[in-house]
Amino acid sequence: MHKLVGAILLAAALAGCATESDPGWTSDAHAMAWDRAVQECTQRTQSTSGPGYEECMASLGWTRPQH
Image 1: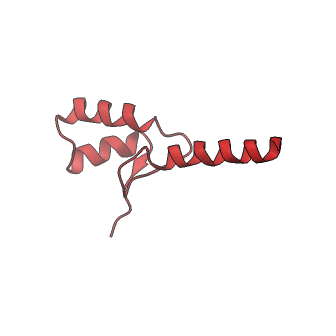
Image 2: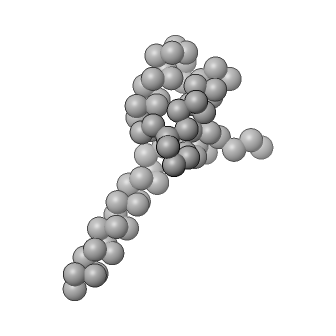
Image 3: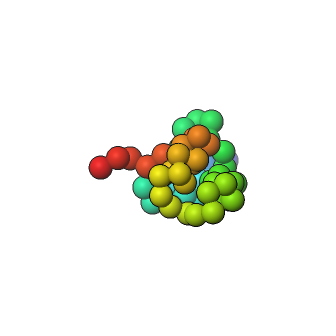
């Protein structure tokens, strides 16, 4: 029973992490928390898109796959 509860809690935690960012963004192991990164880069660039914003996000561990 304890293993089942642990598995459910782990799955819930992982699901929460997976939905923190906007679709298309991925993070590395040392990335700043999504909300903090967005706030920081929005303040730095006065925008939420564009090359400067994406460079800022990349400097904080968040990148978008290039198509």
